[in-house]
Amino acid sequence: MSRLLLILIMLCSLLGCKNAAVPANPKDYVYILHYDRGPKGGAFIDQYSVTADQKIRSFEADDSMTYLSVMSNGNVWCTYSANFDENIQKVRELDTVTGKIRYVLTHPSQSADEVFDLGDKFYIRFENIQASEDYIQKHPNLAPWEHCGFEVYKKKNGHPKLDSFIRFDLDGFILGASMSETRNSLYVTLHPIFLSGEDVKDTPKERISTVGRTFNENQYSWIGEIDTQTDKVKRVISLDPYLRGVWGIKVVGDYLYVTALEKETYNWDIKRDRTEIGDKRAREKTPYTPKFSEEMRDYNRSLFVFTLNPFKLVKKIPIEAMGRRMEVDPEAKRLFVLHEGGMGSPIGLLTAIDTETQTRIGQMLIPRIRMIGYAGHHRLYVTTSEKLLIIDTTTLKVVKEVPGEFGMIAHRW
Image (cartoon, rainbow, N blue to C red; front, side):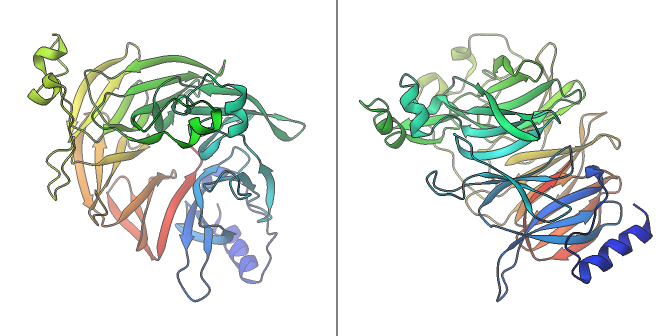
């Protein structure tokens, strides 16, 4: 963006020109949820120019949002989390030119998460898809934990219409998702859950309300691949005996990077029966509760690197514990891993990986880290409960700090 155009937009914003036109290229902007804890309070979606490292304008928002996603037309999908019966739990399209809500999407599933927009259609990710009481009554043979997946919407006459569902019949949650560079495949991490209480009742409604669902890091996980041409599940790959407690996922070229919380039980390069090579706890099949310590010794400290075709674990890169979300700068050939502290700890870390040499090249201690997002132009945005950081991905230096409390980040992938 030219400096003159940037100045004009900022002046118009200051003068109250809410309908100021913004250039249509969505890759020039990043959107960040900003919480105002002052006397007036509230939440806002801040729009930043990536090329200028400058905030352009703010849009009023709701602090119950769960995710932001930039569409191919430059608008932003806002997902919300609330009781399913409440009106707020819908997906809203924010027009980034007018600042108005352009479209409100009522979905049949609960707890909408990330949105992947492919232009002519888009996917909405749900930890538990099709879990509304109405849908369960129409499909009484499905248990509540069999609903994780996506709703597929196609645009008809300018409006999105529900076209189909993509569902993984597994007792797990979708925790991470990453689109391939060709946009032909969407990969997800499927995390097992622990079922408590009575999981079979007489009525569909009781099926929803009586099953306890929590993460179970002591079981193995899966990688799921969706064919975006057919909107079908192409394959589900068990990660036994590679790792447990899978979390983040990122596709970089022909490689797939995966983070996990729990230590791997088995040595991945030894091809023997797993009951012979596991540790004592695994052989005896005894329950295992992770210990939360400052050193986090009981957590996984590896970044797992797989080839996609064939699917094969090729390397484990040593990193610190609690690795979750990942972002990549493809031009600088650098992958960034966000590490969250455990049990409310203020500890936070950012690790940089060289994707050519598959080695760790740097770390940054960032207390109370919340989210990272790569927005192009060698700029990595990092939000915390205390400030926003803009980091140069080539030098690993902070080029700008903005005080305040920030949350989610949206950019055009």
